Image (cartoon, rainbow, N blue to C red; front, side, top):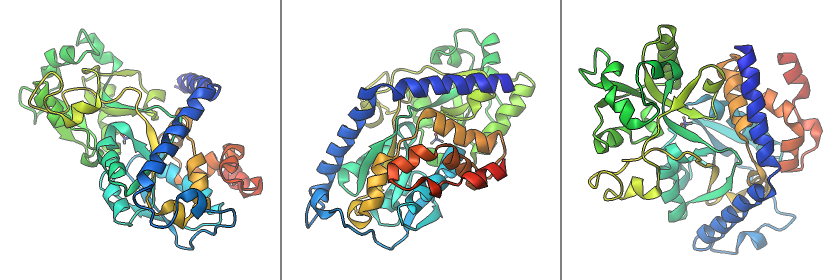
Length: 364
Ligand code: TMO
């Protein structure tokens, strides 16, 4: 398993460095998000645009910056790293447990200030309308590319020919039956606040599956571990980057190709009567979103937020520190901050002495 973990880390590092050396990849999203900031801010700012509202001497508000704690490990560990980065700009932060889909409404109501892991697959439908409304700003796009989808461990291919095609999966539906699913298969989805539209998809594509939502991410992984121990067929929600690819061979189900209209326009796609008759994005974005007041209220913190940029390796490592190494999220954040000191102090302009080198070395 260790060997496999090293292989995964190496390949993630290769992907990361391939992205890093692509100058175009790094600059294009910045331009796009800056344009988005300008357009969403224009109607809201009553005084002046952010460039003149935030001169060099601008002082950040002393109010704490409110950050959400959600329910998957890379985010829980990562938010403590983001909080420490913001503290290095002289700010204080407050961590608040928050529903991961309702958080965008909370931002519009002024109850949350920054979401640093906006996954397109899960939260595009909650985030994008708020950006259009003008109460949330699409502040930056991470280099990390994401995918969230139905997934199965490789041994399932031995009993269900034709995978990863969704129609092949459907032909084997009864293999995935549980005592509660009758003669249909059971798809084990994530917690409901991850907004996957799985039931709509099952209905739209006419699949012989029931959707059961796990209460927690841990319940997903426990079900996968139990099924794998006996090579029992299972199909469940998973995503990448995550720690799972370091522990299990497996693959995502290939559904009809994603398009934005698939989520909003019932007439689009295989079934003219339902939305979600397609898969999730394969090359999904991972964004940072902020409350529309953020740039004027904390101009220095906002400058750092716009520089923040997590790679696939960063997100996978944060998850692995927690889910494989068993670290507390705060300790995982401290390790990441120590290991990536030069990068994130470059985002804030902070002196490297703020990096938790000693703490992380002591923690192991
Ligand atoms: C939002 N998530 C990464 C759990 O799919």
